[in-house]
Structures are given as structure tokens and as C-alpha cells.
Length: 294
Image (cartoon, rainbow, N blue to C red; front, side, top):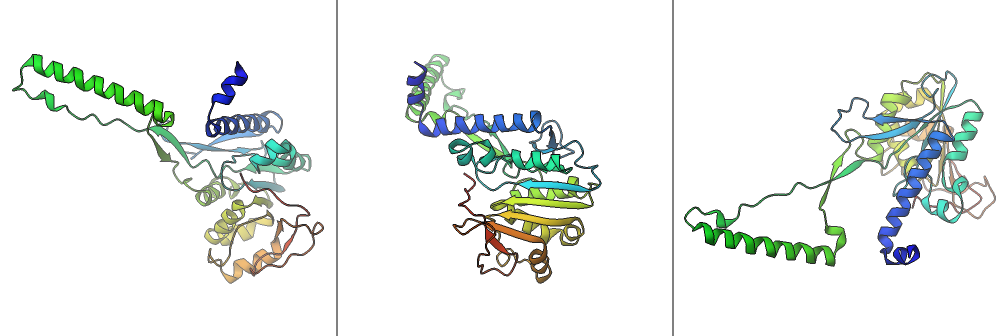
């Protein structure tokens, strides 16, 4: 019976359910296996406004020596994940940040895990009540009641038809964006200002995948002096940043050449130099075909 129910669920709904299960499980691993704390943002959020969160180790802000910051790419992935497809088709070690986090902790790093795709919450749209024309006071009460009854029955049939035709439209939803975290770029800047910049670590290291690399470059553009003063090195993996489109200045490009490296999908042996049209950081082979964010 359960198997039959699974086949009756539309593929899109089944995929959404699977994504939710994976995300919930990875969050549990971050807290239980990696001993990270879930921190709500914005830090001064009221009880009623939309909120997001990040994960941090106990010593993320107090570790005097080194701090590791992890940023995933775009799409459906959430904090602690690199690629949902790898989690499903390979294993957790391939598709999540957990091996990175555990090794960082073992080697004495504080850790901050960003959550740049958690930009809004969905709530049901408030219903607009239209006053019925049958409320006219000059109509007899009996006629008005009869018209109201017909109107309600018509609406009931229409709602039933809409639900049968398209179950996804049972409720109309609207998006409420999270203050100062409405995009991956905003999120990276917010976490920098309120956490990373306030940390005691003398050396900060970033690992950023795909769109996470673009978010880091945007952070550099907005906070260049602070980033240069605090960040020691950046490991990018298949980063989609573009210093021309993002209008990164000459001083940023020079800093990236010295302090960043982008490991990209390639069949060449690991760390083999790969040509690039962009005048920023070195590109080298990851020794494999890296999976995108989906």
C-alpha cells in the first residue's frame, strides 16, 4: 500500500519531500555529529519577522588563531550541503560539508557555515473579501438569502474544481524576504559584518563553491580593506565569479592572484594548471568533474 501511495505522488512533490528530508537530516548531523550551534539571523530580529540562520562552532568567535568559513552554491542546497545530487547518488561525504567541518575542527579551526539560499519564508496570501452585491438593503431578505446561498454553492464547486485540476493551488503563497539577507551576496556581507569581522581569529580561511565564489568576490568589493586585513586564503571550487561583470578593481584582482585558487572540473590530473580568460586567481584541475549545486 505504501509503495502504491509513493507512485501516486507527483514527481515534483516527491522531489520536494526528498529535499526536505535531506535538509533536515544534514541539519541534525551539523548539530549532533559536528557539534555546531544554530544561530538565528538577523541578530536583532523581532519575534514576528522572517528569520534565517547559520551554524557555528562553539569557538567560532573566540578562537584566536584560525577560522574556517564555508559557503555553498546556488539552487536547492542549504547549510552544510555542497550538491544534493551527490548526496543522493553518491554519499554524504561527497555531497555535504561535513568532512570539511570535522577535519577543520580536528585541526583547531573555529567554523562558520553560511546559509546563503535561505532568503525568504513563504506565507499564505491574505484573502481579499469582496462584498456581495446581494447586500443591497433594498432587496427583500428572502431574495438576498437565496442569492447568497447560490453564490456560496457556486464558489464551493469552483474551489473543488480548482483543487482537483491543480492541487498545488489550494493556497496562494507569498514570499517575505529576510531583512539584510535577501540574496546570497547580502547574506555573505551580513555574516561578515556581524560575525566574521567580530571574531578573534588572526587568520580567516574561506571555502566557497560555485555561486559561493561570486558571493565572496562581492564581499571583497564591498569590504575590501577588512577582507584583506583578516582573510589569509580562499579555496574556490568551480566558482562562477566574474571579476569583469562584478567590476572588481585592480587591487582586488591582484590580491586574488596571491591568495585565492579555483579548483575547476577537469579530466587533467589534480592541481594541473588550467587556462583562464579572467585576470584573477589561478585555476587548477580538481582531478574530477565537480557536481553543480542541484
